[in-house]
Image 1 (cartoon, rainbow, N blue to C red):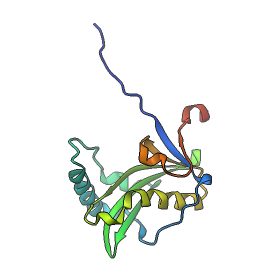
Image 2 (cartoon, rainbow, N blue to C red):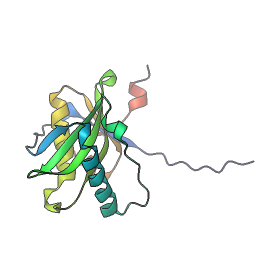
Image 3 (spheres, rainbow, N blue to C red):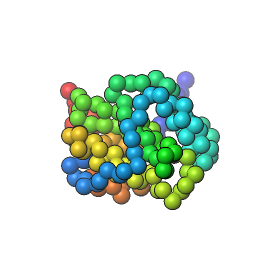
Image 4 (spheres, rainbow, N blue to C red):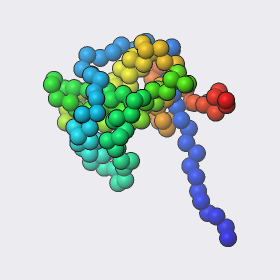
Length: 156
C-alpha cells in the first residue's frame, strides 16, 4: 500500500525583540478570562469577515492558562480586538497564538499596530523572541523579523 500523504512545509517566523524600537499604544489592556465571551464574539466576526471556511476553535481553557496573556484592544470604551500570547520562560520567548478583530472600524489598522505594540510589551518585559507562526509578507515588514531556526538553536 502506498501512502499518498502530502505535507506542506511551512516556514515559521519570529521577531528578535532587541532589534525593535516600537512603542506601546494607549488603547490596550491586559484582560482576564472573564472576557472569553466577548473575545469569542470578536473571533466569530473576524472569521466571517475573512470568509474562512474552516477555523481553529478557541476554547475557554486557553484564556485560563497561567502562561497566556490576553491583550485587548479598544476603540473608545469598546473591546474590538484581542491577541492570545503565550509566555515560554524556558526559552525566553513569547508566541502569538491568535489575533482577531471585528473590523467594524477598519481605519484602526489594529492588525499591524497590535504586533508592534506586543513587541514593545514583551521587549520591555525582557523576552528575546516573539514567535509569529507561519511566515507571511506583512510579518516580514516588522523590525527584527527573521525565519525561525528553533530546532538548530534549542536542541537540548
